[in-house]
Amino acid sequence: MASRSMVVTSDACPDCVCLTCHVYAPTDHDERENLLLKMADWSWPLTDIVVTGDFNSVQSHKLDRYGGLRSGRPKSAALSYFTANMDLEDARILAKLIDENSLL
Image (spheres, rainbow, N blue to C red):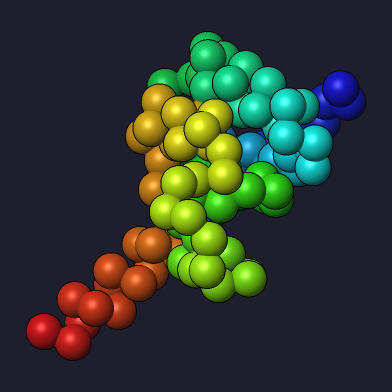
């Protein structure tokens, strides 16, 4: 697996440290599950982490581009484990909550 890294700094907050990890998960189910399980168990640094990319899976079929016509189970148990283990939130879910709360 190729490895690339980049450090980004900003004058707005020179002391802030945030790790950004971009993922392009395999389309093959077993390879994808293996990658996500390995990532969940990595020794991540103790800093804010933003994970972006194409996971080739969804946490909620309602967010899938094909709509919510499938079962309520996540397509990837490893994706659910990864996000729970890393204490991550899907930005689209958070944006929906913000929109709903702004109506109050």
